[in-house]
Image (cartoon, rainbow over all chains, first blue to last red):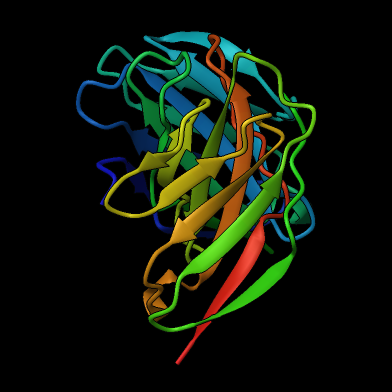
Amino acid sequence: DSGVTQTPKHLITATGQRVTLRCSPRSGDLSVYWYQQSLDQGLQFLIQYYNGEERAKGNILERFSAQQFPDLHSELNLSSLELGDSALYFCASSPWGAGETQYFGPGTRLLVL
Amino acid sequence: DAKTTQPPSMDCAEGRAANLPCNHSTISGNEYVYWYRQIHSQGPQYIIHGLKNNETNEMASLIITEDRKSSTLILPHATLRDTAVYYCIVTNNNAGNMLTFGGGTRLMVKP
């Protein structure tokens, strides 16, 4: 158990819909990262937050957005969903967001029908 | 971040040492070598990391060559539960250190 929690574990929705994935980092960690793992793209970095501020952005679509709240939990919002958005979404956390080990949550499996 | 090259798959007999190689010939001086593994579709699990010196923890040992162009992850006594995809990642310790995952090595531990 890494100490990072993600909800929900599974999500099934339809194309065009909007969903929110939630992540709670390890106690004391200020930085949160989001990754997407699809069958054809592998594990890809989406976005990082540190203490409520966006710190780095990767291959995140404009239809996707994220935020980190004052209690340090983070949410990833996916809108206008397409079939290709079906994937595993992982959240990771680290203490300072600068060079430390990242600890991953169990992931949310999203299926878009 | 430097690119890494790993064999796509390896087999290992249960109880034997598993030696997983990684080539990172373009690594720069401030880049660390990290190893993670992913068991089935679970979240990636941190194993070990190092800069220059060999490292050992309760899970594994990391051997980095003197020129730092390659490394080997050693699982000393592989068990069936070590069957997973192992990722070798090179990253610096600057802010915004996202991890760049390649294809990894799929290790199959066989009875």
